[in-house]
Image 1: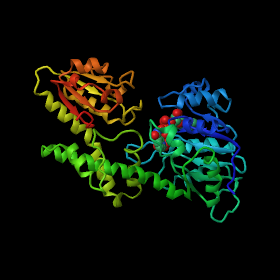
Image 2 (image 1 turned 135 degrees about the horizontal axis):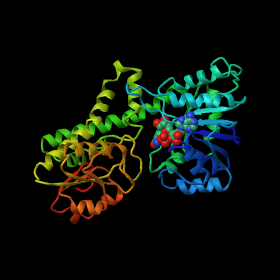
Image 3 (image 1 turned 90 degrees about the vertical axis):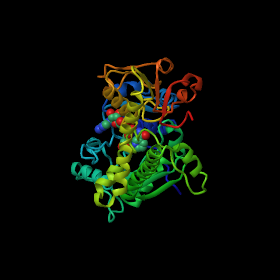
Image 4 (image 1 turned 180 degrees about the vertical axis):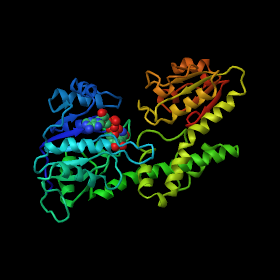
Length: 418
Ligand SMILES: NC(=O)c1ccc[n+]([C@@H]2O[C@H](COP(=O)([O-])OP(=O)(O)OC[C@H]3O[C@@H](n4cnc5c(N)ncnc54)[C@H](O)[C@@H]3O)[C@@H](O)[C@H]2O)c1
């Protein structure tokens, strides 16, 4: 019979992944201690508030805090299980920066009691869960670490990658299938009991390195397919063919499903994770590397097109709609839209440019220094503009009346106003 988990869980990192995981457990009766280095995040969560926008998360956090099931702190406590959900960005050399994971592992190590489960949820290159074991082992030589020849270790260590879609995190966290990769099969079984508390999807047990690689491969798959769409878009534009019509027709083939082109790939998963594979096997990953380069080249291409359109006017005004990395979220990390706006503002220093986004209340740092750039309400900006550039398909932009766009040069990078 499946084991039942009833212990106390500490979640290290209360960001887009850690906080929803904390409430998924807390609202199902598990005592959860959320840990974050950032005191303002800890204070917000302690008040039952959410420091970022994610549908349905606010009500779940306030409920979990009010029930006394979720508390937040800056100090790692003693617990029965630890879930590490800290950032794994890449370095200037495009290798994984594991410093956050290392420091979280070293903070957990002194608190570990026999029987504890340690889950690495942060997206990580193959071999990282083994490194976590090494960091813990350095600090706790008294503990029997999991090993092929150690049937009864003192701690259980797994990688459980997260694959939720921002904007749907609260649904997908519950319904998605979960991969749990253990240092040993016993580790995976122990950790599965924690995820069974809330996961309704299937729980797939495997080894740690396969789990690490599976997560990276998922995002590399998306990246390569988006790069395909972007390359088709580039070629179609060159040949004066409507790419959206081409894709609509091609997708009527029963085994073809081309994704949508766009101004680039953002967020801190898809543009980052494929590099972890490339770094692990550079000679063997030319396709993944090229896909990254194709997608990274998109903001420049979009900005060049807008700058070329602006040459038709004597003193044009340009409205850029959307700054976030995807629709209906407030996340601007690695956002290609921000890069496009920056390139246009830089390329047209004498032109009035408006940036509009219902989810962004102040200009991101990259855009703060342009004197020709203002953050504006979309309706006003569009009414005043000669050129309208759609960069993110937020619902209010999709719903914008076509009459409002009449007589303007429209560059719709998302194909929603066709
Ligand atoms: N955001 C997503 O949609 C998504 C999806 C799948 C996987 N992931 C992966 O999940 C991981 C976390 O991503 P995120 O989006 O939640 O990041 P985030 O930046 O939103 O949150 C991370 C939090 O960790 C805190 N932190 C960093 N080091 C810490 C430490 N030593 N102790 C305590 N707190 C610490 C930070 O202050 C921050 O609040 C990353 O590896 C990411 O690639 C993210």
